[in-house]
Length: 294
Image (cartoon, rainbow, N blue to C red):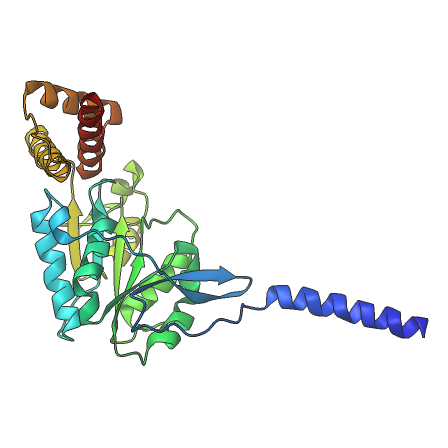
């Protein structure tokens, strides 16, 4: 009798340990109700978890990046209409609105069937499982890899490369990749990379290292670049944002020299002139004016 009880206890411990390794039992996402999801890693596998609260940012909220908005919105409209469209690499300085632009597109085109699934770099190995879960859904899915970059020795980029190529991990027709990165080639660039260039038939050709680094980025049909604002662009954006926040609180904005000097100092402290810096300063400035009024 004692041995039976001991055996049951051992079996229970084994079952408990195995259950901790198994993926959670979750219901399939109802995409008619949920417009976005995250891939959640769980032990050796994972699952799609619906995002219930979305950032309510709109395209009109994004100022100073009209050219980038136009390019990405056109591609997204093509995609949701099932016309030929491209995978997109949004690259450039942090804080310039790359990922926010994708969220704004979801709010604009969600009612037309656009959906977004965010996947972290380390979870790219699960792309095949994600594709299987959404392949037959009547929606247009953007796989968003935010702030993506790879370091030397990492191999997960090969999975993404294969998916973009339509090879082993071929993406379904209702899937496009939108990747944001601070790096144009998604991999670090070194001064020594230039040593591999050579002349062939009087033409300059890059070496193998440069070719390998550019090969992944080349698989994105559309590149959208985001750069630091000039001082004039930055001040213009600050004026627009301060005016907007002031109007929301029914006060008259004073777009004067004091404001400009404070905004420039703020950007120096942040070491960057970009949309995020302008937004943060505008919130600070209008909030301070409201406090002064009591």
